[in-house]
Length: 286
Image (cartoon, rainbow, N blue to C red; front, top):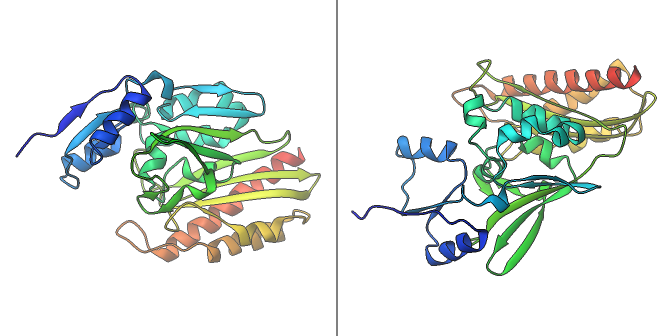
């Protein structure tokens, strides 16, 4: 059997040339998931295109009303970036609890979203932010809204010959609060049994706008639109928060697997949404 080819381009254009020449090749960003799949023989590759030497794909840039994040930006860089912590605190929170610090120094935000795991740490925050995933092919750029990128477990809106180039996010208006949390079996180095993110804007105790994202409880990270409808325009109260948490638990669509039952995951979503709404509401009232 012929050994897989290994290619390491230094520019995005060269990477696209290689991908055109070897369309069956596997793209390598951080490699943290790919190595595991190869080690456990869950994946066979005919070739690898290593993107890690393409500096134009690794950056965080404040562009006034937007923030641009290169696809090869590491999770650790997301976690520690002053720009990300200021503008999208919950994205930094999500990065902080992804695996171990060693993995975070290798894993990339582009790799995290392309893997398209329902429990992906960055998935819940990203679907709540207005912005685009920008992908590049030999035919040019294509912009995909962040909330339309995930298509199913392990599936994303990435066509053959396309490489994720960057993520472009619109800043949240002043006064918007965010939070991300996950529940897992171990304190670290474990994927989420359930995770949730929330964006809340209050006028006093009145909910002006809320966005709620749920992970690991549907085929893709999902917006809890029914739960948001319960809250939008309403005056916050313990009773309203309770109703919203119950709605979120009934709205999600978890499965039973070796790690948790569907009912347990619903209970976790109830607890996460109640905890997050209460925390943001009380913080906003201070």
